[in-house]
Image (cartoon, rainbow, N blue to C red; front, side, top):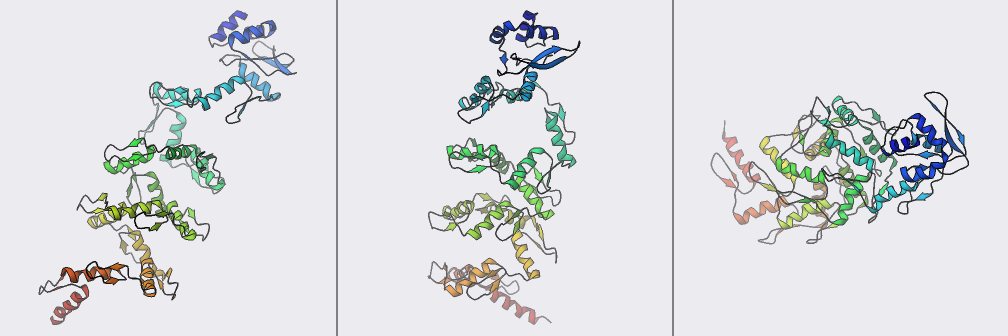
Length: 487
């Protein structure tokens, strides 16, 4: 019987009940079995567990002063489970400590397996797709992707899954079911992982820190993406324009610029987006959700980036300076856009008329000239605008709001540009200088009109008598002559 138990264990087959009992009764073979079969004894102690037969189909665990056995192989008799139950009743010490991360283990074998994480990185490699894993469990789960078909297919979008749990979570996107609710604010989510990520916003917990710069992150994936910045590597390169990226997501989103693909469409206004984050932020415009609140003045924003820009107003910090003209900016993106003034770079070109722009937003606004689109409508008078900023300024007519005030005379303005131009009266500043006669102006518009004197340009021509004018005001005054003559 003992030989039979040994052979079955070596093959990883179930061990019959009779052999288990015989195995325990013959204590003198313990050292031999431990050595030959790779069995591990429970931690030595004064009290252990012994298996005794109580009926034809069951076993009874009783206290014993003999050591127990545990096997990693499967079987009718659950060796590992019994030993674990024993440890639950009589806790054992975890004497094996990892010197790298201080994690403790009961068994030396478990410590040795864990050490591979530090010494070998990801020792388990898939020979089909070359993906690597830290643990054998993750590796075995992954292998199922190659060996098994995708049995679970969504009948709404056609997407297929290997695991039922992934399929179930995906189906909630179509059904709109949000089973997981935030314990802090009540916001609901379709899957558990998204709720867990969201709740970290409330707790402020950032468990993953960069060991080079100390920056902390809520998610391990975010930390891994951040670490690439220090290496300087940009492994993802666009084969159309040569631009390189540190992350695969950024690279994939960039490629949509060339393909023109916009996978995310708003079901309320029909606007499409290449990036999911842009689509999500856009939807907040319709539902009026202001998720991000300034902790200094209480002002709320639909976009996190807008909150960040706003908060820099309170701090007054402008850490990004142009190395050519010295102009400082609150954001790196604003500096990069500014630099294009010096380089003359205009990467965003209109496909309809060929006009090029330094930033994408300018191109988007320009394209509305061709399409006639005015997506921003005033909810009081119905007037529509091509730009959100124009709508915001317009709405101040109804509210009477003038948020920009001169700090010298107290005069208030609806636009920031208005107070900026007005303040030049007090300072005497005239930043717009003519390159032909050195005359300077407070307003850019005044300089443009002045330059027409030197060029002789007369863009305003009367369609009745053909007379042309340099200034629009003169042209309007002239037209009144014709209208007054009419009976």
